[in-house]
Amino acid sequence: MRKNKSVRTSLGVLVNYRIKGLNLDGFINLVKNRGIELYNLKKRGNKELCLSVKFNQCAKFFAIAKEMCYNIEKVGESGKGYPVLALYRSVGVIACIAVFTAIVYLASDFIFAFNFTGSGSVYAREIKEYLSSRGIIEFSRFSNIDLPRLEDEILAENKNLSFVSVQKKGNRLIVNSATSTSKTERLNGNVYSLTADQDGVVEKIKVYRGTALVKVGQAVKKGDLLVDGQVVVKEQTLKTNVIAYLSLVCEKKCEYRSQSAGEEQKAIIIAESEFLEEPLGSTVSVRFENGQYIYTVSVSYRKILYAG
Image (cartoon, rainbow, N blue to C red):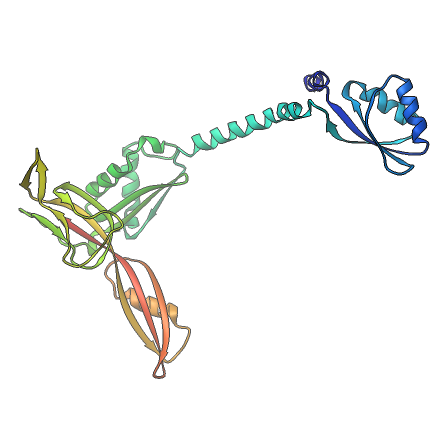
């Protein structure tokens, strides 16, 4: 506080007051006669006066006003040095914000919790034990983890899984996985290509040998070549067998007919029950035709493809 006071005095900061009472002219003359400099004098009628006083004369000014029973109210600060004072005052706030930001940034690099989603979450205990064996536990750092590599390692470690996706979400490590009950049969021997067996959108692709012809987010059709068994080495195209893994997000439409309205949820349950694959989500639309409500359900699901 003492340091702040010296700063205001040295900068020439003015303190603004509002005075209420009678005989304001007499008050002004008295204050001036006692050596106090007044600035920005403004009368508002016969009973109110606004003025400014140098900071180092505030205590004396305030005492005079109280002595004469005037109602005095501080309404702010001004003067040429006030912007510098405001900046000086804000240094502490800025420092606090900077420290808080740094703490939040550093804290965001630590794992506070694990979440396991998808049908593969039935193996959450085994996955967490494997993560622990790798030193990936609560309060370990995200920056020390190679997420794409970790996905491959979890998939290789647990033969019951056909799909693994690992991502950071806030301070949580999200492990989304799918069981191998619905995966396509693994190919072996000399396989020189990987093609789509249905329409879909590429969700994830890993190519260990061969050349990827598609990328994540790309829509593909049944029969499209996804990974080709050709590589270019020193400007020469060589044939090689393909070792690759790819997941597609596919969609299938189902119809449910009923005499009743408002059965959207029932239609979704019936449609999803027909899938061996784990549904990722469903949407439903309804139309009335020939005395029936026709519910069209679009179910999205994941299809895993392997080669090699």
